[in-house]
Image (tube, rainbow, N blue to C red):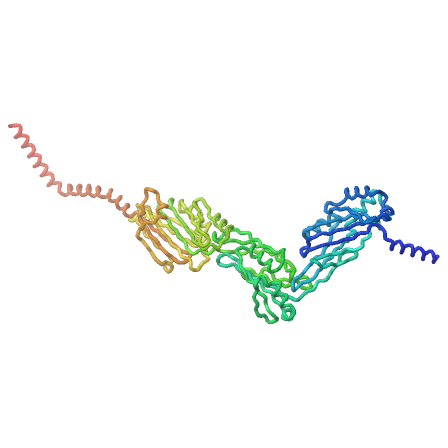
Length: 568
């Protein structure tokens, strides 16, 4: 009995040594971004082909043509007495690779990939939960279903010889599933990223790497060579030194592009969605998104401490490998000067023009948002003009005081415009106008001017302007003003004119117009005839006897003249 068992074991060993089934070899060629190819070569020797395959070479070719996954390309060749079928899988990234492999395997693969060539992370981690044999399951399954191989042969059909992996010139070899872990880590204490919005709307960023002294003692040359194209600066730190990078850009997208270069990553990006602030048409709500990849700086636990602040607000303070950030901020375009012109006729007819001058710190998207914020039933002729150094935004208002006030308050919530009319026995109709204007200029040095012109010929006016301590000059002489003239009709002339210069972004004008002159002229037109009639009547009443005697004398004189005329 023992002899029979020994003979069986010897036969099995000879069978294994002689080889069985199809010889499968696999090669994976990758770059640092996991872009490359995976080739699997199936070699059919003539002896194994006849032993295991119940069909012809034509049957094998046709089967491969029918069932080969679309993700693979097939090439047939021959060597000596063997047939070689080479299947290639090409991919551009880890995601692309996993997506294609999943379709071939019919289950979700797990692939771990980490490549580093920085002074802090160097080496390779590459692991898969499947083998090249698994990637060829489709072939021996199809051959079994077509009865070209039997059940026993199908189980031993593929004989995976080896898998070689080449990454940037270095080659690794595995005999089954890929499992490589040859990563080395150099300590990095933390990374700090601080971003600030400048007055002109640009962004300034500082990236600081906190490097322990013992790391610098051994790797200063490597670290300097790794960052040599970025002109970094060094600063002191009690546990070592800080490597600093300072730069600026006009947008988060451009800022993230520079950050991506410093982090030596292809996965970092940033975007910013802009919308107008509800409280200030010169303000913007900024919705930021930024993705950061710190793979070249992680520690053995797979993360690195990162602190990220934006305009003083801490957005991130955690240990991460990569992170997608979403946060909001605000930016106000500083206004350097502004001009307001008001042409007053009546409470139902007021015309205005506003002009705001600012240094062009906004992006084209922000300028477009700003212009679109100025709208309303009374608002028209919104214009944005200027160049890269200075911009002017202007608009006009025409309508009643009530309607203009509503549209203005929608733009500047702290502004209002009111008019009131009352009647006085001695002053006639009195009209009061109160114009309160306030906005967020974003500048402590902002200066403005306010020009008021009345075209109401029936009103005598008085104008007050404040706050008094902010008024730098006053003019009450009606000088030629082209902008005022453009708001007048052809038959109108300026009756009252005032111009004020003011510092700050708040002001208030009070106008009072009364019809006292016309009121008293109307009274005089009625009173004078009445007084004359009353005086005549009083005179007749007092001197009635004298008037009667005079009347008799006149009568007698007339009769005497008539009598003399008849005698002649």
